[in-house]
Image 1 (cartoon, one colour):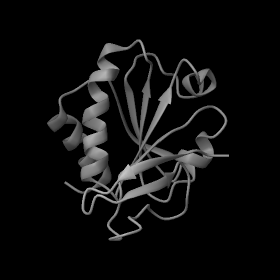
Image 2 (cartoon, rainbow, N blue to C red):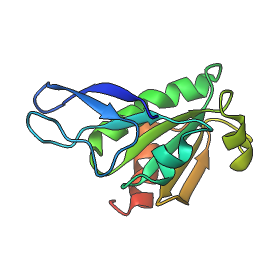
Image 3 (cartoon, helix red, strand yellow):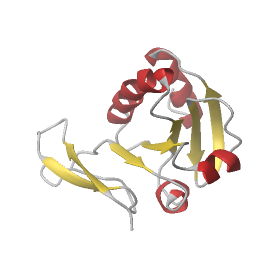
Image 4 (cartoon, rainbow, N blue to C red):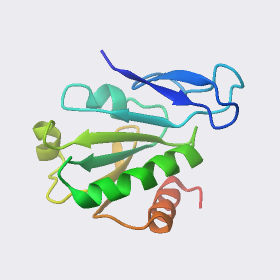
Length: 144
């Protein structure tokens, strides 16, 4: 069973429950604007949360002890908000998801992948400034 988070709409301020996995894209229950879709996934629910997603997914492989990972998180969350309805951000803690870390041969973190319909369309290792990550994401999505 997937989890959900409470997301405040950037447009009207309404609080919405957004599931980790769902068909379509999350929209505000009040104003119907697209909401940022940020979720977590692990070994047991990666297929449901990431590979079955209806929109492209930025997967952030990270760990709590990783300083560069903590620096990238707010940049990725801002990007997920700015690209609401176009991209989903899913965080995977490599310490809690060793099977995924092995499956994707994660050697360095943060490791970012963009997946669309279960296929990797782009990947990069290491932290980068916001404008670099935005350009990389938009190029991979074909929205630049």
